Length: 361
Image 1 (tube, helix red, strand yellow):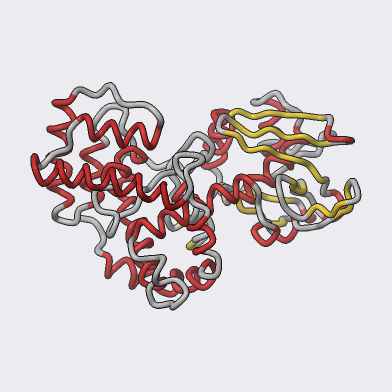
Image 2 (cartoon, rainbow, N blue to C red):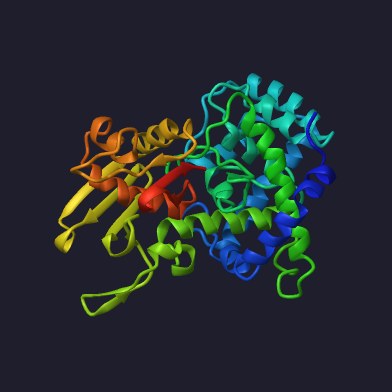
């Protein structure tokens, strides 16, 4: 049986209150930056979401299930293409799923929807969340990544589902469905905090408003990290072409002291492209699949070494993986480690002899 909202909040109230203090000054800015589909700004984007919500509610009130037409409208909105799922399957499964939702069993509703071949938590949560934006929010790699730094005992409180750009956290079986319920609890708590603040209460009236803000936060982090979102050891500034580089797609390699090197990175839908060296002429590209497999490989370890010294590789380290699995120069391990630390996919510490150690979150 799923944990109740009251029990969950009682367990994490102090952590969530502290987290709200950390993000409260920026959450409205994040919401105002929202656009989806790409290029559709906040007001029109919300209008589209509301139109989908009306269609879903009309289906449920009339049939107790969702028609293929409306189901595919949500899929086109979220993913650009309709499904090939038979109408009868959609009707039967959504009828069972939303019967669970009437009992506030969010995870149970999601589990039933993900029984459909090709429907993961991202698709399921869009159907569920758009049925009632007052109480629910979409749980996908982007929105969950907006909570990447909500950490308890060195682990993310809300796991990130895998996506095209974000590798996410591996969970077995119906783990994402259960995490979805807890994710909604976090959104509700943050909404309750926003509604108590004069400068936020008018803009945060629904759980979906918090989800929208977190989605935008994730996109802004991946697109152009702000200086205060970059770990301190990566925040050094430097004169380059007569301009001070403090933010944008510039990073410092994960290294000790003055060994850190400036580089540029472009996060794309299909991977990450890095330019480094003199005049940024040295390039490397890792696909999203390569990144996902790399993080999954190291997920099974507790702490592991960066170990990217070309002349003295550390066995089992990230540099060793770059050389022997990816067939790339191990020097680039420090570049990708810096990006993944910034994205909240890795954390780091300094071990013996000031050597950098990493851990997948």
